[in-house]
Image (cartoon, one colour):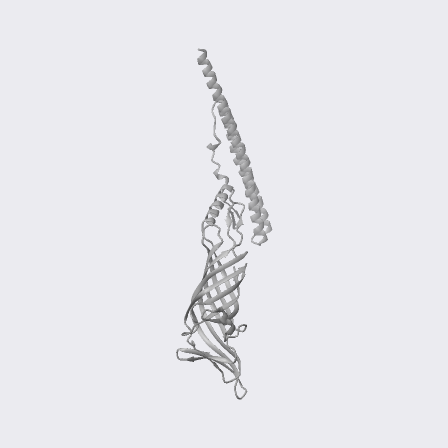
Length: 367
């Protein structure tokens, strides 16, 4: 009999202690719910007041309308606080009563999903709607999803390309042939304009990119010693002109499709959420690759005075046996938007020759 009584006392004590723990837990839940309700309603009211002030500053509503709206929203959220906290208070009373009767109610029995809702108010003939979310968890979830997407997709940026510099030729792939070039080094210019796209080769932040695009080039070659280009069937010769030239320039325009592997050593940006974002064109860059393209047209410009001292400007339209298609190598190294640039054609400039175009200058990649 004593053992039975002892067992019953132990069971009762355990049950009471368990009930005490559950009761305290439920009271804590109700207290937190009241704090959450108050904070959410105040934050929602604050957001709506800010939205009203913005509309007022833009002239979308009048001062009197703004004042009326603020009063309406303040009254509305005061009623919401009173209603929602009243429900929690009734729940607390029920909890105390169930505790007295040996029962325990849960604060989860009441659904507080209506803390967040869209609100609209009509004043006169105008209806004003405000959609303000009080749920921070949803925004945090969306931010995490956005971070995941941003961290798991290849980033592509677009640049406007402009390059300029000196233009000349190499014979038999020999750099030393520049010393004996028939073209003026500093007066033979090139200009390049185009667009490029720069795509990361990794879904995660990386320093390696594939850069590709389209560009248009104007290559100018000016001959030395009063000479011009003369087309003789399948060959293009360089001959001395009869009159004294003030200008002898061969211009060929081409459309190119450049492709480069670029190492961009710009430092990545790390956000407070932990997301890492790659940044480009903020530091040292190095690119190596090539191009393919074709010529759009060739002209020779001549300026001179004839025997009667009349100034003549002559434009000769011909391809001068230039190869239509062209391909070659190119590379650049620079810092941020500006870089040193070199481009070399692998195919001959003229048919039946070993003369190849080379360009050196500065290049701008504007993001």
